[in-house]
Length: 500
Image (cartoon, rainbow, N blue to C red; front, side, top):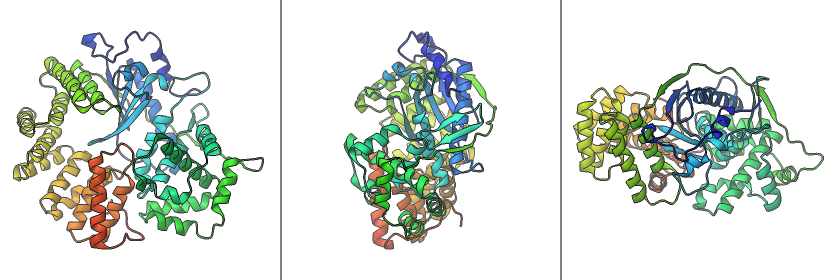
């Protein structure tokens, strides 16, 4: 049965090349919420609801990589445009979709025709890859980059067979297998140092990704029990290299084994894993998006979509979209929040945030915007503390509000007050480098030096592509400071989401 067939319909009758607001001639937009996804799209309602169900199915299939009982919390935000032409309005880069990390969690953006189906199969590799990153953060407390990217690439070849109620994992990644056969691969020692390489050319980056896939596929196929022990050690929070050494102690000529595996031959078997595909929830809620909200979606795409457009040009276009949104609905909360966060003048930002809170005192996100504006304006005062406490109270499951509260207490040297919020943020987003950086600061201030060091090391491990350079530098600088004060990284540690 073809998967994600819901997007095939979008290829017919698409006259516009832009994902416009309905008042400008665009199609209606809807928001569809399922237990684990929030989708905003200009697909028709029935198709959008099918999209939510099938993304739930994809998530359920990926979960089988860690066993049927694994079911982490959280919701993934998704924007689905009808086709690649609509996505091309926002970028000069030829992409099928992309992922981003926002203050509220992961965001996936998809262009419809890259996932439309032929009679044989669908290309769902982007969704599967990015969802694997998100899910694996909850499964594996520690993840060296080669493991994280190798698992994501291993699972992006997933095949779902709902008519048979089964999922197939571990199919060969033909482009990467061809690449390593033609161009070779990086040794495992080189992959351990991946993050230290810094910026790489596209050719180098591709070789690292292909190599990570090869090694993970090899370990799952040829050393499944040891590889499982390795992952269980990571689940307990052990330092990755030590966990590796313990799990693979005594294995001889691993380089020779992977060479034979990569080049295949009649004696090499590339196994695939078949697992049950469990039913997914049919709890779907749909609403029509207001024209103002469509402009807000467009503004976010302008600001977030990869490409070489300068920040000034992006900001100008986003400002136009937000201005149009406010003309259509001056009181729209989504647009007001986006506008406040995109302002460059701290005083102007603060004025707008105070006005928003006065109009929407019941909104935790409005209070969080006020707290951020106070912080940007340099007011680390009781007013900021009160705003952050109110935001965390109104939206307790928001990563941004919990991390913001913890960060405020870290900056004002009140770690005892910030510990609970920091732990809550880590539980909600265990693979978020900013969250881990805040938590490690709290631990360091409390005198829990080794725990702070281990947590900061984890923050470095989750710095993947797309991480803002300022955050990347901060995380590395903090780790160096902790290593100077606390000594070498511990061989093992407890999970950073653990309590007192």
